[in-house]
Image (cartoon, rainbow, N blue to C red; front, side, top):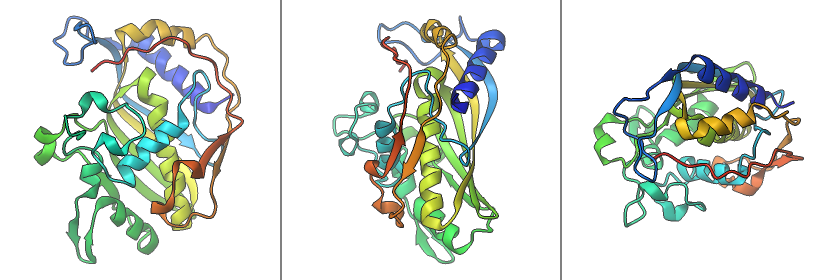
Length: 276
């Protein structure tokens, strides 16, 4: 049984049974037909995954692993804010006529800052510190830049990463302001678990704990019947995770350098509406 499924089920049950409903509130998100997209939510959800034990992919429904890794590399490796550099259409709703999503996500990671050791963007600063100052408690990225929020087509959801080396293990905290539990929860979990594995490998560490902190974990009203059906399913065993051991430079990773082996999951045939 996949531990990621156990965590997901526990989160969903907590939200359904004890969550707060914003029904009647003047909410920003809406459905394609113009109706307001209301939610039930839990505040301050913290989930912990030990990457030494298993890779945290759900089996209750398929997580499109290659696409989520492609988006991860689009943000962290290409540092792009243009959907032309992405091999899926998940960002199309927020792109302008040029394909840009504004000064969001990859753009923020690409901006260089001055340090005592020279100029680095946020990703290169992380890579530098992991190799040169692994004992540091300051290995942090943050893309929630208030100065540029008015030029972002969508404010960052997953906005901050903290990395910490303990012994020979690299650990990570992902801070997320908002989480659509059905659409994006395991997508983000898989992405940042992959990022942790990549950063650990190129820096000479073993992967350790991945902690996911969600400020507002919510289920949209039109998703509730779907997650209720998922709660009735029995999870499969977690698949094996493979990462190409020959890659020593973070910028050399491709989507084909990480794989899930024997990934078995339940079919999910319902079209999931996405609130925008």
